View 1 (tube, rainbow, N blue to C red):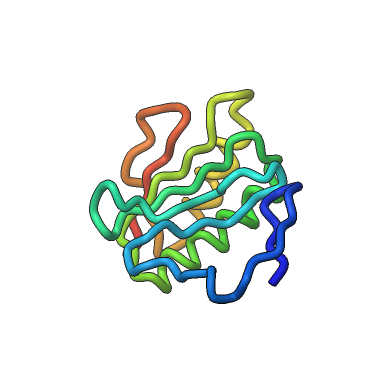
View 2: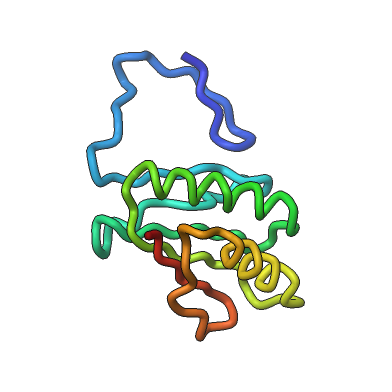
Length: 120
């Protein structure tokens, strides 16, 4: 089986590939090859996080919608959205998008770089 890790490609035996145990890390790779989100196993099992730093608004909102869908499917209760500080356009777009969703509430947005949400 051929596996691609960013720009690196390698061939592995199928027997050498293992799954991720329940509660393990889950991620999606973004345009910069960075992990966009993961299940936060250091805290509560129901805490999730997405990192949108460096993304443009439209692709970031698409990723955020998929992330929130996954959050609901995985019965997540809360999540941190890391959008960074920058010009503030991404932060405003994220908060406006989240506020438009009837099943998601902004719990905390004290830090300019992070918005915390709760799913009801």
